Amino acid sequence: MHVKALLFDVFGTVVDWQSTAVRVLSESGPPSEDYTAFAQEWRKGYGTRTRQTAKDGEGTLNVDVMHRQILDEMLGSPKWAHLGKLWDEDKRAELTLLWHKLDGWPDATEGLYALKKRFIIATLSNGNVRLLVDMAKHADLPWDAVFSGELLGSYKPNPKTYLGAAHLLALEPSQIAMVAAHIEDLRAAASFGLKTIYVRRSTEDTPEDKASARSKDEGGEVDMVVDSFLEIIPALERKGGKV
Image (cartoon, rainbow, N blue to C red; front, side, top):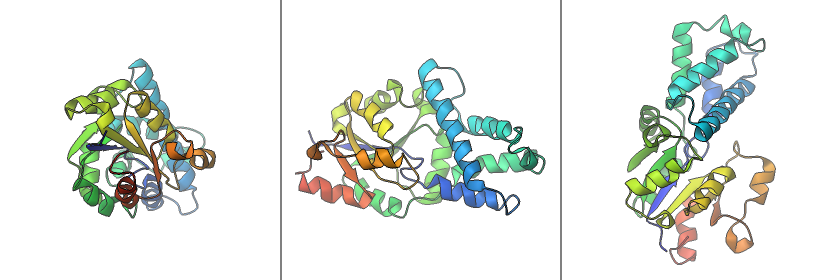
């Protein structure tokens, strides 16, 4: 069946969260800090909490609240307490909002504008609505719709997210392709009937996952593998317009 809509994971797939976070953090503290480790720990906490909430329904559905909770816990830990002494309430509030202004990958804006001419393009992200809207304005991401965990009542991989977005678009799951740089996201999407497009990104997934990500044509588990959004339309044309 021809795909009519593309749903995009955002953090890591569309935007380069790590480079942006490291840059902002490094402008806010001592130059000798390992801000890559700090950003990765912050991001890991987000992943752990969203997965738990998707499973048991406990916890906030506003990622701004979650990011702040994780930040405060990190700054209260022995590892980062020295930064906690430097960053007051105002600075912590400011840093929490860095996730609203993440820079896109080099191919993101051009690729999305090209895809928008052919498909409905929308987010399917755990980020809250205001975060996704601010990010779209900052990075010039031309979404037709913004679907978030906050709107859909849970986080990925809960079926409320994938199937909820399909319902709101008035499409069958098989008419939608999930685009993500995370193989687990695509496995969940496929289990609910969506097509899948894996995008290799340098900061996402383990080297083993990236190396094993292969299309079904190559004996793999996803429908398409690309290194850039700009490759999606040519790849579809080679397949007769079908994923």
